[in-house]
Length: 72
Image (cartoon, rainbow, N blue to C red):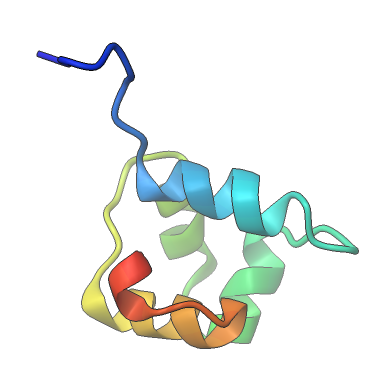
């Protein structure tokens, strides 16, 4: 049950809405996958909320977006 009235947010939603969508130019799943050297279906599944973010992917995202692995 959600006590504060807010729904849980999947990291994939944050990835898409806060990092990929606002980028200039915007970044799609294939572009990000290529930059991270991971399969495109991994990024797509994360964005769709069908997959969590592994430690390896967190490190890659952190390096690319200048965040920390713990953020992801």
